[in-house]
Length: 176
Ligand code: COA
Image (cartoon, rainbow, N blue to C red; front, top):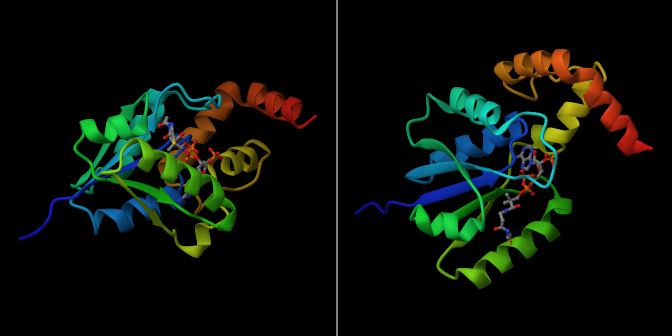
């Protein structure tokens, strides 16, 4: 008898990187269903709107049949229960991720003991990667080729053309 396990992979995905994709790819071979859940109402000010992030996620995962894209707000554990998911999936890139992830996992377990957090490690090539770094490097003229899907690179170009100078100004202001 095969056990059907749904895993939720939550995050902001602003934008999705090859590191996220690597985790999704590994997870889809382990779990019967993987729901990539984009957090609405981010504390962080996103570069891409929710609609844009969803569209990119759908396009780059469309060939994986057991991967779904969704949004959620409120408590992650409540959303997981609603989806009948028993696993929350998080990527751990380095030890620096661990403290924060450990706290979240324990808090989520306290709130909903029936849900397990599973940590997965992305390919080492992506261990230093984050969405913020991608945006910063790209906005300052560096290459992100190989770090994000080609579609995301194209969308970054389009976005920076329309809001690039204000994004750069914002970044510089935050660094002061
Ligand atoms: N490859 C590349 N980058 C990765 C990565 C990977 N495999 N895994 C994580 N990251 C990066 C992300 O790009 C992101 O980078 P950024 O900060 O530069 O954007 C960073 O690591 C972590 O962000 P993310 O994965 O989006 O998670 P988060 O910390 O912003 O959000 C939630 C975590 C959504 C799980 C958490 O906020 C949550 O559950 N919120 C709902 C409310 C709730 O239930 N709160 C109680 C929690 S106990």
